[in-house]
Length: 178
Image (tube, rainbow, N blue to C red; front, side, top):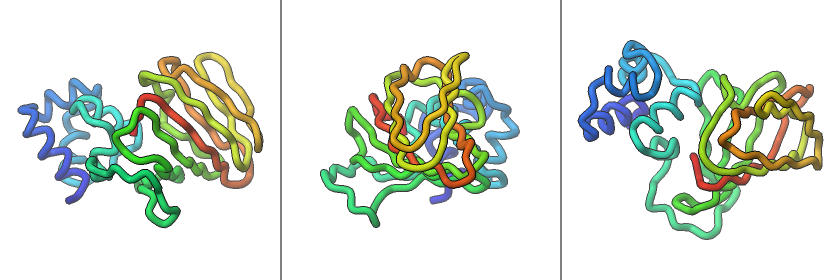
């Protein structure tokens, strides 16, 4: 099922109008309509807002919620890649757990989100390769290979690849948010 169709069906199941979903997500009704008709692909930030407004994790649109595997083989990882984005999220941990582990690949000049992200919980990141700028509230940190950072996720944040090669990092979050 296409992403727009999934959003439309869930919205209707929740008894929400397009205008209601738009208001709850802080988006325009026109954008919601275009996404539901698969005329445009939402950014990660937009999809996150829609998922939150519909009361589901963003992974609802990409994954089977009954997955209880303890081992995730490298070729079986669930990936979140949106068109027109040079950021890849690979789920390293099973779904429906209290903690989530992601492998994040960000191409040079790209950001993890269009805007600073705020969500409940905590997260810790470790840079495997490349150079990243972490925008955290009004502070910016530069992380290079081998560096790590702990964040309170309720403080606005995002990651930016400021290097010349793909930045690869591992992020652990609790509670799970994808």
